[in-house]
Length: 405
Image (cartoon, rainbow, N blue to C red; front, side, top):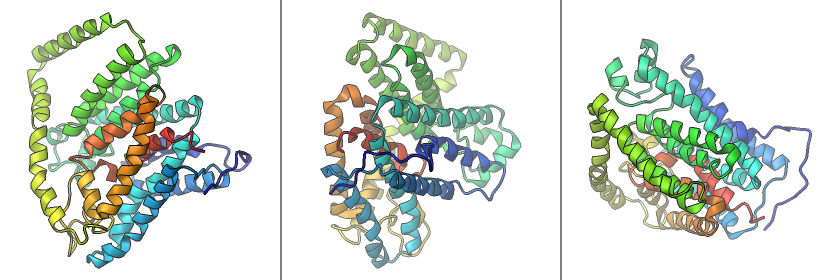
């Protein structure tokens, strides 16, 4: 099966709107500060449909490899799962809401496939990180000064439980919420790593990495904090061992600098250091807290093979009659909603893609990192069911499969 035409049409839609997707979406979230009429989720879905229409017009789809076919099968499997969602007693709106935020972003798989040159990836990742800098620095401003209008805004959108400055400073939410900010911050660190293997862009890459590390830590999300530390280790491996960018003796100097910085921070504000430590130390507890919930969700599945239907175990179904147990963990949620068949398709797509990516790690080190870290965070969080997070995950999968045309 092949839908492919190497001739690119010009004239209509000359701008690659997918490159601007994240900046436009983040600006949509910023607009919610000023008007309740802005619906960033609807806006993002409309942008994805425009991207799909543009790629169709430009004939940029290539459906040829096993992975491509599996992607389409998985996409349509999620669509038809509405039948067993209805059978399990939930309304179609639950399926539609979940489809828009976690399945429609699969469009970015084909966006990633179309980014088959370093220049295209440079442009996409630069604009992706630019969007994160907007939301991150805006978040820092609100985190420090906590103006009352922002506190009221955060309370209205359930970012905080009490409308006061002290509560608003527990986590940095910016305009997207701490969960999304933390997950995007980690992905932004890896996107910044895209630029470290070239001398002319190395400083830019380091700046991107450090900024997004700060955003991830300030989100105060356990999964994001742990993931950001793993990414720091991964990036050091790339710099000192994989690419030999810097002499390995400087790795020791870096460790000394990190220890010195943590020591200085301890004397300046030891409560901040302890706060970070307590969050990291509580990670195993977070998993054990969810384990009973996961077991209950699995034991209440409508069908082991087909699952409960897309959205049945997500927060979109919370509070509805006949709702199944909410599975607060992306992979368990996926199994409960899609059953053995859906989970098998998903895992097989990941195995094929990661095998390609790891086999050419020097080319796909960023994309492998984005996928693996997202999956690790998905153990205890539904981050891939958040609309701002899912596109970068599917984009990374597409880039790895860019040569299958």
